[in-house]
Image (tube, rainbow over all chains, first blue to last red; front, side, top):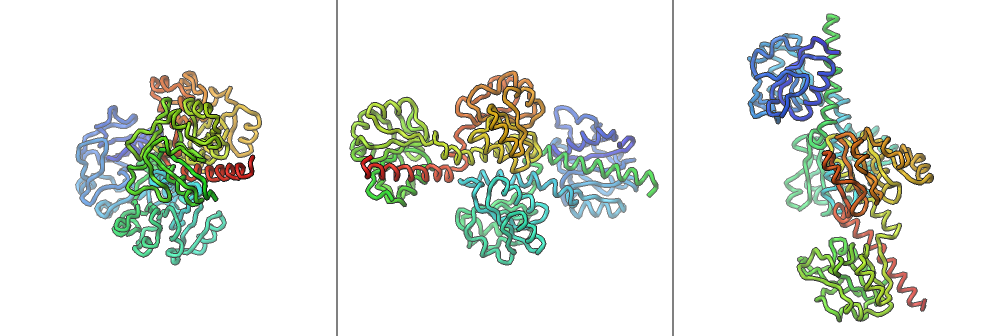
Length: 299
Length: 299
């Protein structure tokens, strides 16, 4: 339980409502800003006006998926008010306070470093990334169904990368009957892909493996679907790039050649905000509990 | 091959383009009406103006998914012209001519009976229905992803009916990680569903099995999702009804209770027109060939 633990939650979207629900079930004392546009305030939380005094005595500061932008602004979908995080706010935080966010830009990292506060980037965690790969793969599948005039069942798919997202993407496609090739860089990934019934190949020979396919899913965050690769694709092929911005596709050339190519980061919050919220909530609940126990034990 | 076989194809959508392509590959002599709105005429076919004389010497008359409406009108998406089939047109057809359509309304059945012409309803065929169940299930899956805020992976799904579509729907959901219960009426379906790793139940006890679910897919074409069943569903539940019109759901009551319920017939032509067209084309090619051989043998 989190009885007596003070949490300040700033901004965010529907996912944060699941976080509030979970932490409230764990009996944390929750203050929120950026939810004044909701019909009814989130249950179990106190709504407050954004102010320096809110930061006093806070044990855990929770920021949304992208903590702040490059100027310290916090994304809020349930409020028109501006939440801008500054050095001044941070001076009020106790030194044991931990800052949690999905991923942190340099601005937020700098604020934490200045005060020597622990910063946890949830999306960097393997468990969170694996859970998040489920809504990502379902969103990509939805895009594939929408953007082709064939069934995914029986189609020729290539998945680039066999990490946390590539693994799930390949399994999802196989689950509905697609023929799946997986482009890998490591020999252990090659072996695992073969064991799972995919047709593995090394990304070095992507060109030879991209000639007669219907769908190309990329999870590798470097320029891999180059103009040369695109030139070799059949005109019916559709590229769905799941790597973080700017993706791994030469989108300019794809457009020039008339090949449909889409960059689709951030799918979990779009296609399954409730599940995505629960993933964050479960993880956060556990992390804050662990932190509280550590502090109680004087570690 | 279909060399020397005269085919008249009237109206339809993108699926008929696949039919024309296939029959042209088989060397049939194809005349088409209702495609004048296309940028370029379908390759391998002669475009003609709709006229009685076109029906002379025709071996196979091809009509679209829904042959005609109740007044004899043929659905055309690639033309603004009106194609209305009458008794007069049919008098010009040779007596060996076979009429092919997806499904026939009484109007078309009557025309064929009058001239004693063989009528083939493709969607009645088991093979076509099984192949068509693939795009149907993918379309339903797409709707499920779009209309929920959770992932289908891990969700609690019920599929009603374990026939040609229910079987595919259950397998598709299981393939992406849903928990699948299947409501059946026959003991052999109960056994098969159990063998495949679903949780089967008899539709007589649907009420007890519909209390804590996320998604309800229906393939049974009688009123089965009654007001009583809907009253028992959790408010988050989504109903996707795949049975032919008017479906098996009390939509009026669902709306009253605020439960999302959608009737989704005709998904193959919408989500995968190319695949759906190929399914029809493959079947038609074979049937016309069989018919030609029979006639050649004087059967």
